[in-house]
Image (cartoon, rainbow, N blue to C red; front, side):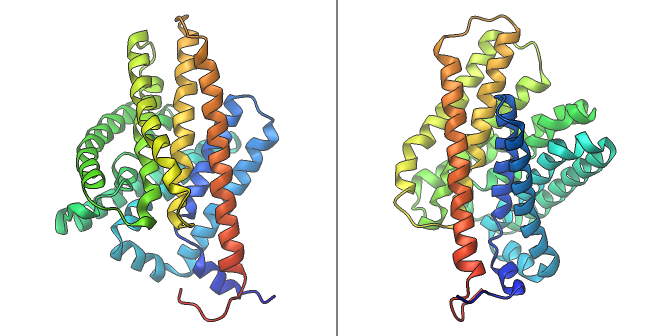
Length: 324
């Protein structure tokens, strides 16, 4: 068996691998909320960091390849928002417990980078080209993903900024949702892009969780209303999943991770909120919470195994001349 040189391995790393990193950071947090062994929290963090370093290594060594992908593909350009989301997660995951100042710097850098990326993306792919057929669910990462910064803002003493980000991204998401929804349900979707359908469940749950964190003391009816919306979108995505298992692996498989984790996280936060307020909780809700958590764990494992297999079989092992 012949292995590729390290330079070729790095070049072949699929750019969306940072989405796997994002999912691993997120599932590690949810595992901690469910009181799973702490070693799993650190294992997920280490694996997430490794995936993120693979992407950053490609960015550092072969910036021209990344630049070409970003400038020619609105899908890859919009997905790249996930890299800053992963860095935001890293800041709160284990950097903050180790050094609060360094975590704040990383968080602020990630937020600023995200904003600059969104401005550049909007100017290039929305203002200049404005091709509605290019509006895929990946656009949610550009216009709604920054809500993750709002979710973590209180941890850095930036609640006011978090409120501003929350309302701004919610408004942008609602606008983009109308266009993306029309495009997805009225026009044919190429097979490699189909896994992105899972992203439909991510923003509602992300906004719902952020809403609960930034606005404590919400009425019980408001919590249940927000939970119903998030769960309905999750159910819609679940009904689509069987179609995805019939297609081969694509880099877009990364979309099967974080959306399910954030949906599980939002349900757990809602359940904790209702418990703290002494609200009446249906007996089936804690069970649903744990079932969705286990589903998210399986989804992240599934995506991670696919990516590891892809890296070993395509990036690591030499199979003769190939076009990168």
